[in-house]
Length: 138
Image (cartoon, rainbow, N blue to C red; front, side):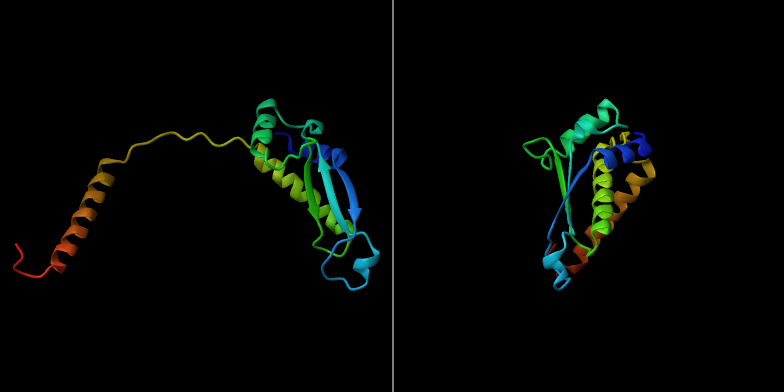
């Protein structure tokens, strides 16, 4: 994954639209379009290999709309520019995490000392429970 190329392609390919947002801001909320909605087609991305693109599509299948776009809205701040930057960084983080291939797990077996330690702990736990019983039940 080429992070620099991916970041550039996200900033180029993402279509931003602005609308009025709710929340704090007083009369400013009713006047200024500060909410940012970003739309991005995964096909327009550069910097991802075929396997990473396939992983991205499968991981984000619930986030991709009918028209094949990833949609993210940002309206936390009162500034349009800040909301745009936050939305772009969220979109970048989402794509980076979704495209990352999982680390291969090598199956291992517990060591002999680990097995003995587990059995000793089980034995001690059983003795503790046995000592709670009333005397003379045996």
